[in-house]
Amino acid sequence: MSLSLSQLFPGIETGLNRIGFLFGAGTSKEAGYPLMGDLTKMVVSNLNTTLKATLDEILAAKSLTYNAASGTPNIEILSDLVTEYFVTTQDSKYGNLESEIRKLIVEAILSVTSPDITHHVRFLEALKRRAHGTSTIVTILTTNYDVLFELAAGEVGVRVETGFDGPLKRQFDPAVFDLARGTIENTRFTNRSELHVNIIKLHGSVSWFKQGSRVFESGLDLASTTLERALVLPRRRKVMDTLSEPFDQIFTRASRTLGSSCQFVVACGFSFGDKHINDQLIFPKLSAGKIRLTALCGEEPDCIGELKSFPPFHAGFPTNCFIDQKDTGAATDLWKFSALAQLLEP
Image 1: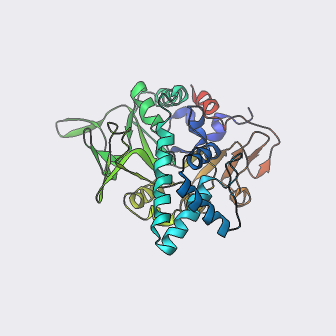
Image 2: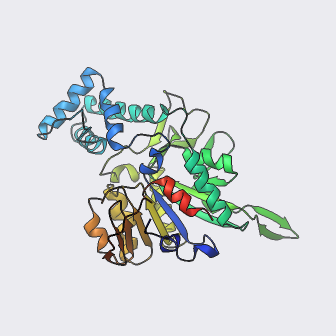
Image 3: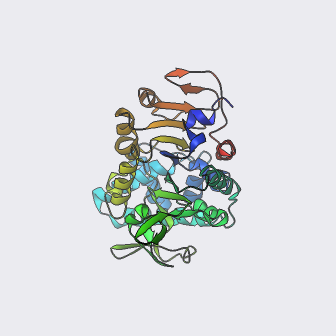
């Protein structure tokens, strides 16, 4: 393992101030959730004959064919094409296909009925110990729909905020990210000495539901097949989706956090395949020198050339590492979430 903890987070031995994480599907793989290829296969194989014919029609118009063995084109590309056709034509058959893809993605996530949260528990336990009993805030940005960190937080006893407020049926209110918990004595407020983790879910969650113009979070209705989920489909071009409620506020929060309270960022299991996140959040912060980003990836992302052009960018791959604008030749296994969780342990 060629990357040390101090290389990822300078000064971490004295506390967790200004650190953050960017997590993608790879961090949920060891818990039992599918990666892009398997998710694509699960969704396409469960389309009925009519909807599969509609998908084939769209692909044929682009001189493409679906490969069931490899799951390509993947669900991001398929969703892009389906949405493009629906927006352009307003034909209900494309809208029906888009709705069914969304439904099948939710079903694929919910089909993992007993996820292994071992590594997520280990990760949060490590952060809790490194907080040293002080009032500490750590931010996690994620594109994952699952609730692994929420489940793990319950096991570890860590306060987590996801942007919702209330008892069982929680209403969207991003102001909760800024709320402090503590005691008041003689008009003096004292922060509670605890680890506080803000989870900014850039693409929503299986626990988020739409009711009219409002968005709620509830763990009571996770198995529901009738309620409409508030989530962004896996797509490469997500601009329109992320301009709608509540994702506009979620992205505003993420942009405000990166470079201020979150300056030393480690990405794990994240493919950098989402152009909107790259263009709106990652590249501008790197260009301005507001964040130091270390990407831990199982393979080099398609945009690696652009990422390497930013001096504050570093990376670790199974075959080599890129540190301080140089390829070191040394490999790392920290792209595995379990290895990162282990490294964080005091």
